[in-house]
Image 1 (cartoon, rainbow, N blue to C red):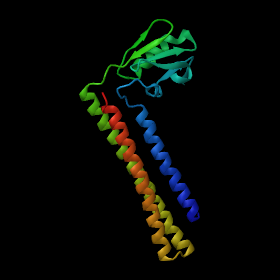
Image 2 (tube, one colour):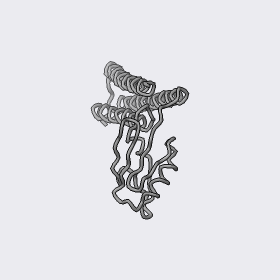
Image 3 (spheres, rainbow, N blue to C red):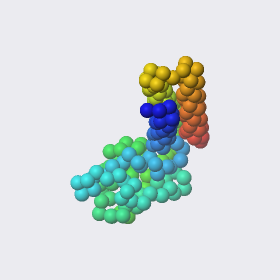
Image 4 (spheres, one colour):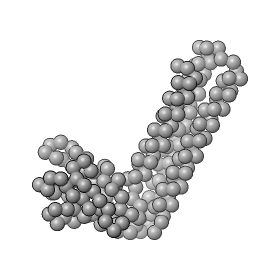
Length: 186
């Protein structure tokens, strides 16, 4: 492995960690209805577990209501069961053609719980970034032994690894602050 490959791979892994964090944030409820909260809802569709968003059209109505329009109306009951099982904190209302999920405004207590969850996810992402940094540093030490790199080059590369780590940690802090603000906005 060369130095370039080491940095490329490390940066790619850090990018994935930030991407996973943002994906996890999508499932945390804020004050508005967001179709992404349905990403974890899996419906038993003729024996095959299928994501809800692949089998229906989901739209946001008036900011607080999600309207789910299944492509196959015969599976309305299965979709309702899956929504109840997913524990989204809202009950599905069906009129036979569409299912409505009305998200009530979050209570102050629920907002605080959500902020705690956001902070925990952010901290987990930072731990992942630090683990990647450790792996990169270990690989750098192996390279140093294999290729007899000069001490100056090793120190410079360690500084680069730290700079990369700091950059991604700052990205995580910004994402956490943005999500906190979204959750706390009434």
